[in-house]
Image (cartoon, rainbow, N blue to C red):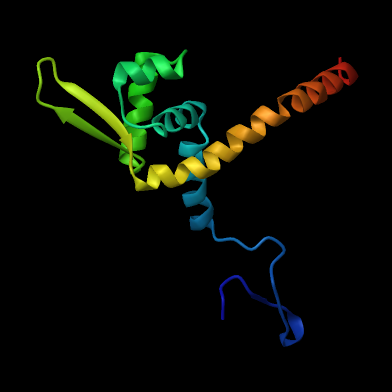
Length: 135
């Protein structure tokens, strides 16, 4: 019997109101923290057009510091979304590229970005209305 089922009095079984396992919630939370981060969304979106060098990516993203881009890329590499390839030139050339997993991530990232573009005005109007009522 599934661990999401609970036995009630009288021998009947009921599904809990919000079935979940703590370890599942933690795993999902960790992944969503990575892929839901503002810089991650922007970096993955830019790498969706193909491999980029560090400075090309920094310029394409705009507004991201060198340290934050480095941190974001390391996290994406660690989680299997990005590969880092070093070419033995002088100076060394380093390219960043999405893995298959990273390209799969493009689908929800692109959908979320499109939704945000379509609904920016609606969200702004809702915020103004809310702020006006709570001023």
